[in-house]
Image 1 (cartoon, helix red, strand yellow):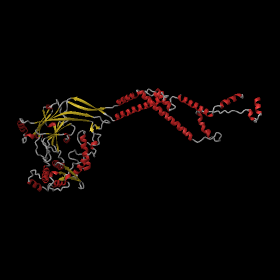
Image 2 (cartoon, rainbow, N blue to C red):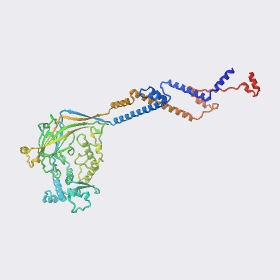
Image 3 (cartoon, rainbow, N blue to C red):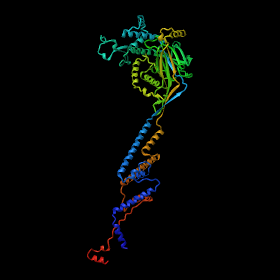
Image 4 (cartoon, rainbow, N blue to C red):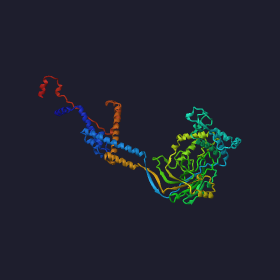
Length: 638
């Protein structure tokens, strides 16, 4: 029995204590890994193991090269750089595709349609501002004041009889308010910039070297606005128009007055070889362009062109002879015409053009429709309901309608009154210097801010998503010709009782027709849809890695496993850190029972214990005897 322990103790003592501890820890880690692999969900023990499994089993091209050549570090480094470079280039292309997708590009689709077309509305104005009988007295007074102003500034006498000016002086008391306001806004000359140092009465200064304009001051006269013009004609017309607007604003029902005479302006009207009548037009009065007539504005019976060509459109013979209604306000001869849609107002300043007297003007039209994509693709509006500007016109939304409404609303808010040329908002009144003394100063200041887009009207008013335009081209020829003008004017004088005083400037002819039935529709369609985006992403993925959708799922699985391993390692680190910072346990021989109470609940859970046996060689029996020479003999005897 003594031999076995002795031999065993000698064999065990040869293994160092640290190596035994390390071997036990390795066996414990191996046992834990085996238990972990027996679970339903498999988690890798380290990032290296996860990466090796992924590269060895994925279908992504080139990934296997990262682990199969691990014995050749140069190849491993080469394939690692190549793999991640390719990966980066692919996602760079992905970024470009996503940026293009979220920029919402559109494709322009051009469609050519052929069908019978509804004829547009046509507005024709006389270019003769009408002298209303209700305001004729004040206009006569304004004319006489203007004549005297021109005489003082330019020494020009507009055939103003002395008796007329004396009559004005005798009626000074009755027109005192008009004279007072005209004198408050006088027409003046001022020196040009390069002549500011010369005196006004200097003989070297010519009257042509002066700029002319008028001054508009605030209510307290502390600030004034100088409206100057390089052309004296423009300055006189603008100054006269300013006072003319104030006179019209003093008549509440001036816009409702209908003193037009259709037969004295329209000598002949024919559409599609049929004669027009009063049911085919509506009348309104423009302060600057005079009596205006809009044809085909009735939505209940719209004209339809049966065939294209000059004989199947609208043909008008109009009188262009000036009746000298307001010569200081109108300086052109002819008529003004505009083609527009039925649901849009006629803005003669923006889209109209003049018809020359003694000329036959043939206007051919081409219809063009534009349909824009709304939402994220463009900043257009369907009906204007989402535009923060109230529509003051009784028509559908257009960009010009919105811009003018925006200016008028700002005018009412800033100046306390409305501009006469635009519709009147609810609860407001038109500007008149008998009630609003400094409205002119406020208007020109506001107009400068409007043109500089300080008011934000051009930013607020967006383009409509659907709009119809008419592309016009005009041709001109002399009418009537020299050989036919005698009998033409004779027939007009007999039929319309027209006394011809100037044959060449008396009449004009206008033809408006469709050039062809074909009309263009410019539509938009999304250039980059979700299907297109997925297709482009798949093309890039296949180009750089030659893989499929399942390869993408493998990559997603790799990312999820990476996150799970990171979470597990972080949880283990947190537990080990908490155990390291926990207070030490009392010794086992302590009389305190808290240790047993703390460990009692843990008995239900299995624990692994590592028992380390430290075997030391026992001393021989003879070692208990005193050392001496006699021991050798005893041992040898034993």
